[in-house]
Length: 198
Image (cartoon, rainbow, N blue to C red; front, side, top):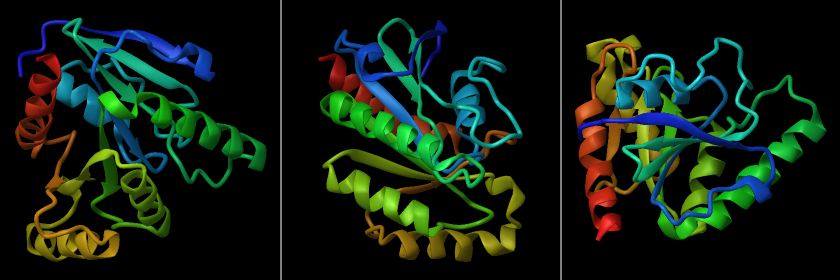
């Protein structure tokens, strides 16, 4: 897909701030520090558009990036950041849940799982929750460049079985660093955007 423009559209700290213009949305969800912002930047070919940090738990709002003036990439707050206080975690969870219910009809979710670490119990809960809502979900294994070629097949198979993914459900190995899998991920997202535009 050709990216002509990409800009921060809005940051929603409460449900009142959610986009209400009916444009299709692709939202990225995953554990803190799984590489959501880096992957979005790579997909859009923009180095510093979504803020990246080595400190987990930086994204605290629902951040909308308007792409080609016709759809949004949405960076959701990461889950499972242990150092966040209980109240903070509850607030973030409530914000993400409100967002999902608000956007579900025009939403395609990309659930990111750390390819090096594998699917954690929190990832399993997130996948079950998202699919339980009836959301369209694509699972991507990030940081795949850090997994040796010889271990990749086994690592991906373990993620697939841990999440309970059906054999037909795509599990895409991706790397924001090397660019591996970026074309394949666009191959999944583009048809959704094209169908939404009609």
